[in-house]
Image (tube, rainbow, N blue to C red; front, top):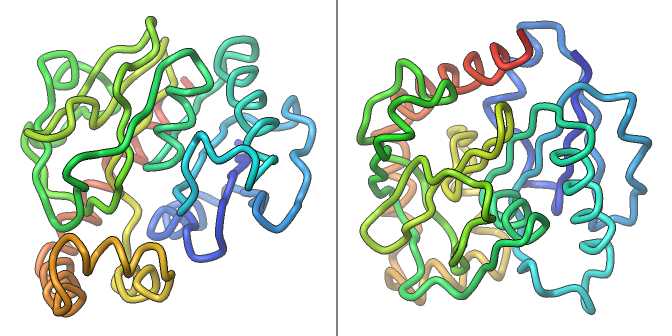
Length: 237
């Protein structure tokens, strides 16, 4: 397996998933799109992951590389039909690239919050062996308003209907973060856009509370991440 990873900032990498890739001896190639790195030929890769970032799917004037990125995602899923995983911005980009729509999330979802699998999500192989209700890290001010026509909604929350979706046999995306590690919240709070969203939503002391809540749930986060990673790997067979 050779994995291509689209990144939109240095600190939004695959997180704990890197450990699982190393354990399996899987080569992965990050492309730092915000740094101007070009998208390589897609045919040489077996899977594509698209990570999060502070930009929005409609910010194409400020971030013109979003246009070829969406084109690559569309081609990957619709033409090459190979395994895909999108997280947070990657979830929104998948929706936008395939004809869905995104809009501002009101109110923003930030914190350690719960998502519930739908009936379809319970039966989807990506969530096999995982609890129907899961706690996860949320940090988003945009959501998928309407998923693509061919998408199936796999998880929801009270304020965000499309928390996870599946397209075809092996393309999935999640609005929430499964990849977090012990230092993720601390590192992301150094990003001004993220810090401002956190404090405006949860108050000036929000960082300490979020760090503590994340630490208290980290074991469960990492267990769920490993199960989902294994389920994703199984999509190759």
